[in-house]
Length: 111
Image (tube, rainbow, N blue to C red; front, top):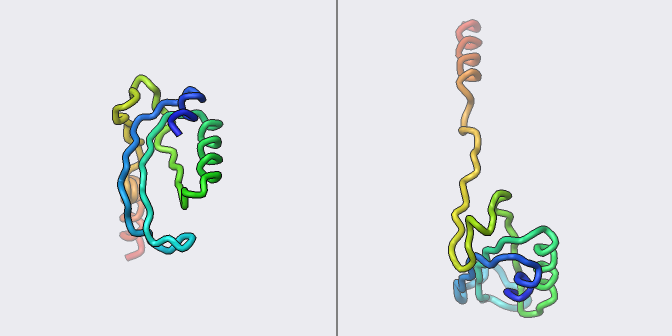
């Protein structure tokens, strides 16, 4: 896997072996599997190539690819170190102040 990433000019940030764990359900008559976490920087074509390679290996039961962030570069995540990825900014949960005020005035008018 590392050679594929290196050939495509990607960077491996972190590779963790989480060890053997019980699977949530039986997969191909297996009740236990070995889990790995691989963080890497890559272009879209490299992600497709990695997924293709994972599908071809019979020993790999399942895998999941998750896009973490668009704005990560090799400078912010040097190889062999954990990447510092900025948290995405989400709007605050719940109704906004204007919506709360509107709901309060509508409630007062209905009384």
